[in-house]
Image 1 (cartoon, rainbow, N blue to C red):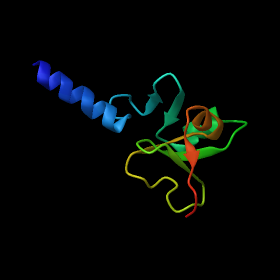
Image 2 (image 1 turned 90 degrees about the horizontal axis):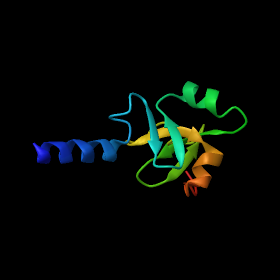
Image 3 (image 1 turned 90 degrees about the vertical axis):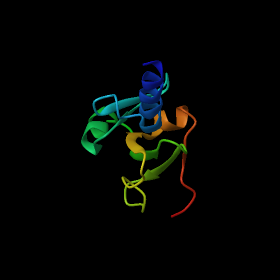
Length: 91
């Protein structure tokens, strides 16, 4: 039973959104969103970015990987920066 629990926790941490019902949180730092609309309503005075969760690299709307990385979510740019994430160097 304990091994099943550990496997479930590991799977949740790997995807960050699998167990959160759509809204996930990087521990104590920022909130990420599954939909651009949800992020837009939260980030009213900030840019919405697509954050690649495992790498901490984010992309702006119109860039190639915006909304298209395997494990990513929408976030506010200022919150992403405060969490230690950074913009992609070039497309």
